[in-house]
Image 1 (spheres, rainbow, N blue to C red):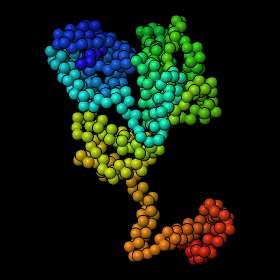
Image 2 (image 1 turned 180 degrees about the vertical axis):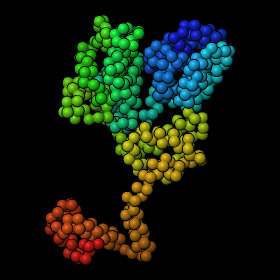
Image 3 (image 1 turned 90 degrees about the horizontal axis):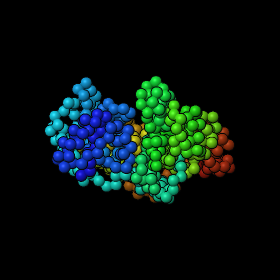
Length: 467
């Protein structure tokens, strides 16, 4: 069994739990801050995490959010004072395994941790495959090309820029690049530059010294230091404020930086992977992104395809997400009917893979039976079916007409229906241009002489144009 991680800024709590678990033959690893535990998670995953809520730096809630992003996330038990009990219940609802109110009964605490560890072992045994890359699934040509490129970059520490629409899985690509690199055993630290207020982003990236600004009560390491020797993933780099773009460029160029309010020069030994959903070339042209920084980041570019461009992967991804949701909810996995899968492959998926995952979770919670059909999908997707059906109505009518002709013993099917097809298109184009043949021929993609010939061959009259 892997160790139990105890995370609490109170040394007495850490020592007490370590001794109690040690008497049961359970190995323990201690952390005084959540920041240190998050950094350690990049290279190893414990059997169970027991964490306090309020600590210097990141809180227990922040740690819980980080753990929930892991493929095989361990159970997290939140420790809290009674004054934080409502918060602990909220954390439980957001994915914590359980909560442990302080002061706690030591015997009951050990039993709770043991139970969480036993369930964790069962879940890993049932679902353990490749923990580092379970969600990077795809058999489509676009994904296979992406996989091959990641493989080619495995022996390189080159800076990579990942582009693609929101929800396509850019962070998963960044993690795969890290896990297949020479730095795989060292930290992978991610930061979303768009999610952090401008005034705090500099401190988040580079850290700060005690007293450097109001509220800086202790020295804090930034993400560059946390990622030392490993990989720093800068998500949504296109939204980085201009003054921080300048500082980031200097760090990339010099491989050194200062903490906010600091005077000690710190080495930046990290591989940088950046990602954005925006067109950086356009932002450079608009003066919103530094051109020199763009060229520093754009050494190797990887484009993550949209989900609608890889419909052959939807069934594979849907089954994975249904199983994942069922595991989290401790229920039997649902299955999509063939009709539902065919329908899902026709959608545009503006939210990409993230939207598909949310859909599968919705179905797992809301669908009454084991088999989920189109009627069991979220209402907004079912509305899309009506739109698709309406847009395909002419195809359905053509299919019905072809069947009728064949059932009545008709022949020359292609010739006869093609005449009707051409006649309709020509009439509509002439109606649209109010009879102007040159414009109509351009809309049809044929020459004017060809249009004149077809009007004569098809016997199109003025009366036909009024239809």
